[in-house]
Length: 160
Image (cartoon, rainbow, N blue to C red):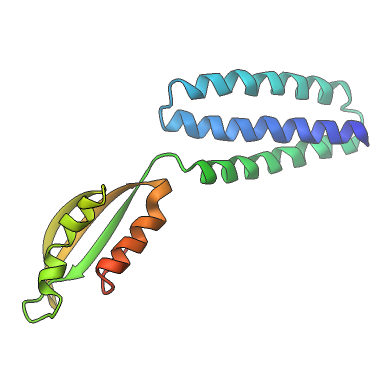
């Protein structure tokens, strides 16, 4: 049982590192991805050697495979917590001359830029009039703050 637990933990650790390293590679983290790969492969060699030496037990095989699944899950959780990269939000606001918030809504892109976000604004014309369409680039770590800011500045905005 102790051996199965060791196999489980080592494989979960290996796959967690593998999942996170893959995400670093996709985001072109040229320093961190290779450094993490060294640690990942160290854990892998140890886990695989122990697992192959003791492959005759179904419990060890199950521990290896379940550790794999848990490692994927933990890698995703870690990446969500670290929140690397950027997100792009599309915000649409009605801009009608007769709207009481006309001036406030028209100045919205600059107000959002003042908070440090990148905003590309375009104008559209829909069935109900003019629309301000903003594409806002934000670090993933700041996505909730951005949504809160947009809701404060323009409660009637559509945020995608």
